[in-house]
Image (cartoon, rainbow, N blue to C red):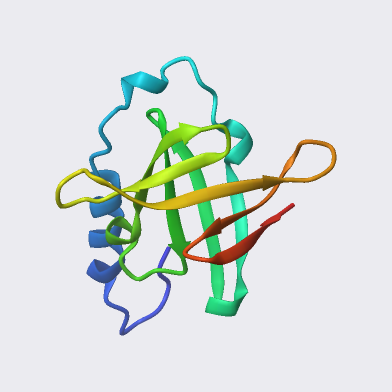
Length: 123
């Protein structure tokens, strides 16, 4: 993964281990729901990167990339209703801001809005 002298190998390996050790608790209230249609990469080029949405344990996790500390950049979202999720605050597990997905004329996910900013899905 690293093929150069003068590179801090621990900078990368520590972040990989932190990401692998990240604990995501399961939301059992969404056991029968499938969130795979939300999965994908979304354009965040205004912020020099992209946002990745991944369904995990009955929730959505969102990660902005690139990130030098990906395990700390993960945000968890709880399902509220069709195409609507709310951020789970890590300090007290209360619900925060809304994450709203938008669909095209064929019913496919085309974008999401969070913090008044729209991110288009990258195909």
